[in-house]
Each structure stands twice: as structure tokens, then as C-alpha cells.
Length: 266
Image 1 (cartoon, rainbow, N blue to C red):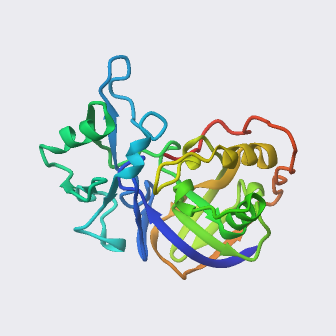
Image 2: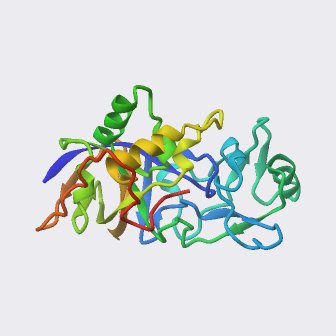
């Protein structure tokens, strides 16, 4: 058993855009209410209809989205309202504003189409990304500079009485936070997205190199909701590990491919 508290909570209303920190939220089978319920689709020839992410358009990070009409745990998971987008110049755009597509195209340098899917558009469908403060702090100490949690686009960030990277052995266990129970799935294999600074968009490739050398490219753990409800920052969090925990990935000094092919969140 690992115990602690929910230290931070975040939602990303539009896939690959900046999101919003929350004091409380509701979760159901879709994940965290409203998380990635909206996305921008590519309209370029040969890529029509595909999700547009930071990998193709890093300037997506300069935009942010929030649910202004139903903040925190008052948002209905089955029918979240349209989000509001904030452009890099501070202009606020309602999701249904007819000028939004033109504004996005002008800033991103490519045509896009807005898309809404209430089932969620996480890379691992209907999932929640869980991270721990011990692991974040360990990465920052190893690299000798701050590591912003926003880089990893986490949903639930936990402060627990466990060592760094203990979550790599939790597959098959359970996480209880407030009213919510989650089934812990596989560790999250990271792509290049965390190497982009969420404020100035600069690249930090050493972050991903270190994760590949030392942790097999993993950071955080994916989870799915099995009993929904409300959570609030400061709620007690407890992890019940599986009867036979999978061993945490050992530290290595060479580049290796991630164990898992799914789970990196955009």
C-alpha cells in the first residue's frame, strides 16, 4: 500500500493545447470530465482528418483552452460545454466562433478543422494519466534544472510515501482518490512532446534522452476509471499494488526503446 494525497489536478479541453489546473473534478468511464473532448484535425493533403498534435504543429502549445462556463467539478462528463480558446496574443475565441479556424490557420501555418468527441481523444482511449511528485523531482535533480509538470500533460499528480518511479511496478493495481477508483494500466511511454517548453516552445531534447537512457522512455502510468465520482486537490490517495507487482524498470546507461507502444499523451 502506498498512501498520500492528490497534489495537483489538470484538464486539457483541446488535445495538444494548453489546459487548466483545477481544484476539483468529476471522473467517469471517459476519464476526467471534458479532458481532450475536443481536438483540431489536420486538413493538409494526405493527412485529412488526422489529429493535429504538437509533433506536427509546436505552436499549438502557445494556445490554451478552458471551460469557462462550468469550471471544476460542476462540468457534466456526458455533455461538457464548448471550450474557450486563448490565442498567443491574448485574444479569446469561443469554440464556435466562425473566425477561429482562420485565426488558427494564420498562426499555425496550416488549415485545421475543429472536432468534438465526448468519449475523449486521449492517445490511450478513455484513460487518465497519473504521475508522482517523487518521480518528477528525481528527473529534475538528475538533470539539474526544473521540470515543469505541464510538460507531461498529467491529469492526477500524487504526493505519495513511495520512492521515485515506483509507479512502473503498479500495473494491475488500484488507485483510490477521493470517491474515485482507477485500475492502473501500463507505464506511459513518452514521445517528443515533453521536450517542448510549454511557455516559450523551446526544445530540451536531453529530457527525453535521459528518460530513454535511465527509465526506458517511461514517465507516469496510465489508468482507467472503474468507479467514478469527484476528486479534489488534497484528497487522500492510496495505491494498492497488484498481488505480484511487475518490477520497476532498472536504471540503464544506454538508449533503449520503450516497452509500451501506447500511452504518450498529447
